[in-house]
Image (cartoon, rainbow, N blue to C red; front, side, top):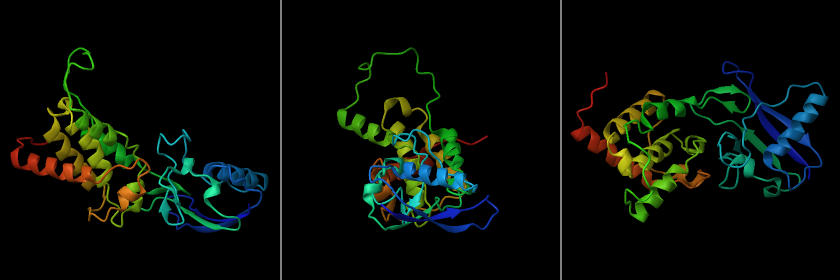
Length: 251
């Protein structure tokens, strides 16, 4: 396969940046998208040029760090992570445009690498259980209906890649935040801190500069883990309930 790549190159957050065209021959359909980038970077190094910076870690669809907008879609044409996208999803002679996530809260660090620590700060604000739950108990000690356990597990599969933000016209983080709130709000262990959790996480989300949700569903359509927007409805219920009944005052 012969592929033409138009890749966003940007030295740092202050640089204007722009698309640079590269042509690659002998691309195997069995290569992953990141392996194709490895080949391109090796060619650039041999020519004495600077390789393209991009995020990756596990390359198994687990960590969510391989964030690229490919032909206008987060992670590319398939509902999966970039590292699990293979070149057989494209045709010989195709032109592929690759850009970083586009969001105020995800500033570009270099080329295709963006700073996603805003998600970390949202989790640090309340996406955990800190109350003393005592000694480890048997898994069946606290009975939880199967449908609730399944829904909580589904919400917990969010890998925090940020595709929902990249897909949203408002760069909203509601799907990510709702998944992290829902996975704990559904379970008895998360009830004790539920009001403080949702208030602090939503406040942090707003402070980080993410946009508002307008329920277009683009986030769900692009999420590689198929997180449902029903979690957003639960987040809204949790937040409204907390605001009406909470006595929590931030110190």
